[in-house]
Length: 259
Image (cartoon, rainbow, N blue to C red; front, side, top):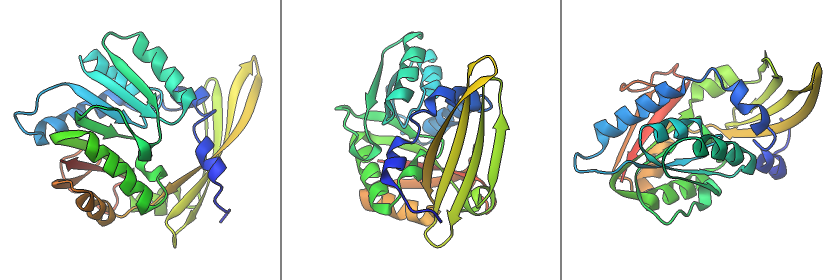
């Protein structure tokens, strides 16, 4: 397996922002919003008031834009300035207050506590050690109101082994394309993703750029143990977009942590 390069890891999602929305057009963001809000309504205490949300690793802001339309006060955090620039365009076009901050998940400092915090689309898998994951969870805990909930999803062990694995994927869109090559090390649980992107520049001319992404496999019991050590009073997990426990073949697991 290729060696880990911190610089590659830090630059992930830099140029990807240029083609991200087109490549993610198949994601049903309204369904994500509905599911997150149903979890929040089900597990937040009845006295929990307020419609303010902090979304970590917010990307280009598609999720936040939909919540903004529903009247939520939205705050997004991401470490990619190019992603945040696109998020700003979307949220500026909407109605309602918003904030966008360029910060690392392990160093989040917003100066406010929230009833709901989210971190979606397997963003926590980009934290490559239990220590780094715990640092991020500690920042979440400090930014939650008492009784507030944190909702996040991670790629499952099954997905790392069977879907990502050492597989190669390709896709072509109207104005972009990618070649995606994975290298998965079962011993460490770490997956290196080499992504070659092609963006339409002019006519049939395409710009090529490359990014290397790294993700870490976490077992559900690891997440639960870390969350408990941080101080969360309630930890639950679900198969993606259900209210049932995850099965061994689920590709994505949602976690709900309550302060």
